[in-house]
Length: 148
Image (tube, rainbow, N blue to C red; front, side, top):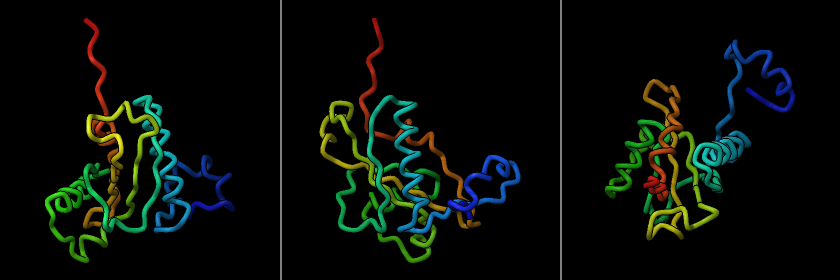
């Protein structure tokens, strides 16, 4: 597990793929991933967002979500359609995040005050295949008008 004690060795060991990030709810890994997501959105879309990890998705107005992988998208689709997620489905969820926009003018009409929920889940083979490009196409942001 990547920790303070071995963080300085990461780049030396990175090609061995022998370190893992602890994504257990309530631990630092999800906080770090939240920061990476916010920086990635800022870098690629030039939009400032705040991303916070959640322990559970309960009693929220799910007005918009982005699956950060195919399983997360399927779970989001089921929730969007009012379906209950069984224990097996819930056990695949690795991370839940609430994303809010710092500047509401970049968001599509009607979404300025709403959070976007991000769902990250592992596949049935217990492998995590995150697709961060889903953030680029899935966030409810206004697209720039082409110059004429």
